[in-house]
Image (cartoon, rainbow, N blue to C red; front, side):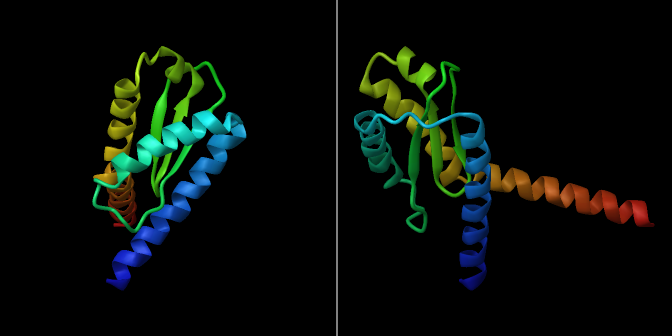
Length: 128
């Protein structure tokens, strides 16, 4: 159990660092109404993920680029460019559900663990 908690904390810390880098490149949209709206939809979806140990953060990046992505630890970003293309709430919910599923299924965390294992194996083989 403690090992699981430590893993979750590492995931959150890693995600916080990645989010800081993202926010260094793209500013957050300062429209509280829009942020509250996507947070409300995203929070409803995140309740179905089975990861109650995470607190989810939703942000809108103030860029015309078209993108949405998840960062380990519960951070979800959608760009203003992507939001402008969405025609209704169902499309927004679909995008948020897709991104949240990456966190719920730990896709990014698993990929990072595999890359770390690959580096360890390569390093170990190189030492032989």
